[in-house]
Image (cartoon, rainbow over all chains, first blue to last red; front, side, top):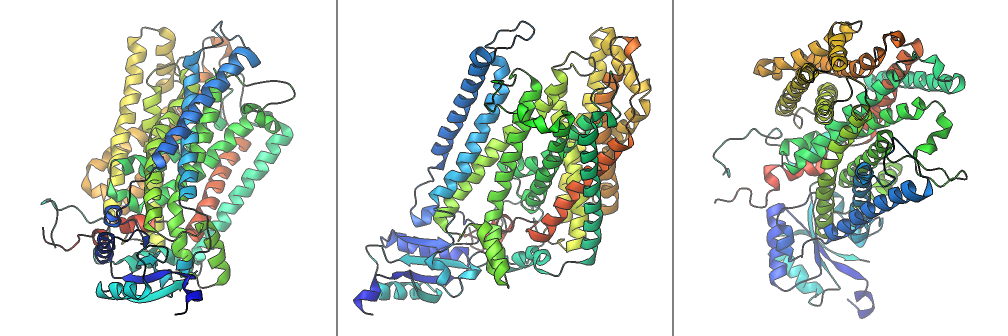
Length: 181
Length: 456
């Protein structure tokens, strides 16, 4: 393969038989020192994060911030409305009756947290993104239903096209293909 | 095959089905030619929806005088229907969130279905406060929107808490449902035969490709949403009950209301899930994924929550007597033996007596019987809200202001029409979206465990 086509390669991709096989393959690549490889499965395979050597998701921290913002917003809004913007005397109760503000504070906290959880997840995953190189693999349409795929990406420092193909073959993978960007 | 525990647990789905077959079974209704019964049911549902739309137009044109409301009874069918529909929705959240946190794996086969029901029920519920205000074109007054009158809502009113609770509930349920749908929409996208279908489902699947780095964040988001939805669902019906409990009216002003309303909501929602599920699994051939075990589990929850509701009814009476307050005591005696005794006893027979039949395993596992009982529970729970709302209002403190409330034809047609809205949305869901969470079911299959088949 000539040099100028080399940089267009996204990676080497192959299909595995099931959860057990793909997990063993992931462990193998992790132990061999690969970093930029990805597995594609129809459902989250339990233990795969460790098998790939990944750190846990940081999403919860963003959600915590989202929830705190919602709570602060709810309390500020209600306090401002009740004590300065629109003072209403109701049964002689104090304007700042914080006990009555609890439900709305709580609801806004949940609302902001939920939005942060969903949109944070999508942003961290880089979705929506309707085009991706892995979709070029000839049997990748199985990945959402019953196919288990592993892709060694070209950006990995240890990447070597032929060596990757050989490695995947040795691990019992099928449909080994080079996918281009 | 080795099992981790020595206790044999019932299979979650029929054993021997592989991953591809799960996709095939769930996608079949979406991919096959639409069956004839679907068109018949859809025609019926749309007719009722049109009835709802004409009733709403008539109401907005003419004013709330077309309803049967009178002077003491200012809350009638509108509020009864609102509480009924919100309650129905709660089972969906219970199944999707609370059972998820408790790692009840049997939920995986029914959560999508129940969540869809939640969303459609909440849409039906939202119609009623919107029209109940009388001048529906001023509904935006409910929200804290800056306006030229520099006017702001009263945050110390439970009715305003309700606006926030129900709209948050709707938004969070919709997000939760959509997040669950993303991987399954990708399944349909990848199986699509036509270009249009591939594109439409593809757009909504957001380019999902099942990468493990994505699943990592996805699972975390799902867990967090479940953890958020759990207190949320409890808060929503508690706040709905505050609409009543925070007032000073005998029959409404009780501290038992929040837990009692939540139990009732879950009770009615599960009954609705059973009603719909029995039909859907029959009509779409989903018996391998939604087994008798799932239905039995739901019936057990109906039994448990039905008993809680029965306890609450008894406790209300006890408190009324024990309080020594004559207005309170009168409100309850009048409920059971006054002019609305017929409604009260319908409620008791449907909600307290009928679910007790589920103690028998024969009845709990009989499809026709559970279908009938679930319908009874639906009826009973509608009457519960009717009894709470109307009987407390119609005979308040001054006998001179007492009056009997009866609905008009507009009230009745609006109620019927709200079922049209619900079933129209539900039938569209059954036709166009996977009604079982494909990736979640696969995740709890024994084959999904990477150590499946290994010796310990």
